[in-house]
Length: 298
Image (cartoon, rainbow, N blue to C red):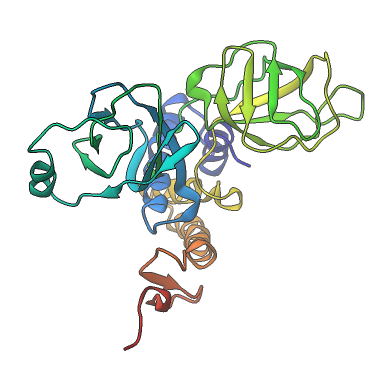
């Protein structure tokens, strides 16, 4: 996997220019292309659940900062989960809200101005709204953290305890216990952080696959990663390098890096286009066709 730090270093190597000013330019070019690649399709790897907590008699709730478009909403009340239907227009929403109704059983939801509204208004608070959404990329800008150590991480478990340094904004970051053959050390694999409880405890998205770390000080790396699949993490850096060499007037180097980028893009579209949601599919040979799974024959 290629973290923000890795991509910054790669751009410096590809451009043979490691000055601070050039690396800052690389940050901008890489982030721009990362967002562009993520926008090419309704990729399944961009979809994530996000949660909001209801407040009694409150109808609208701010969406999480990284939500782009919403697939569905569910509200969990006790042991029941309700799935309200979407309202598509403001006029329809205003029509159903002619009278104020309170209930913990939602029937409809409406997305407006960065918020999601529920009808009826929740009667009580502390219930969980789960937003299933396509998320948008945030800028890659956080250097790898290597000063933290892992205290406990059991095989098969998602519970993580570290020495210090975790923050709530590290949800979605990745942690790699450094590989070593000695006891109480890691397996060298990357694991996504699903939630952060406090500065020393977090929950992983998947269970740890290595030998258990117990009461240890295992070295590790915490890193911010692109949203792209791992094999395409370095793809934005190649277009960034092509842009750099084009400005420098070196068309040979620019063309070489651009060709690598274009091959990666074709492969990304071919491998990760969704037969469920994408209107247009790509066969990997520069040919696009209408997704037959979204249409019926009469």
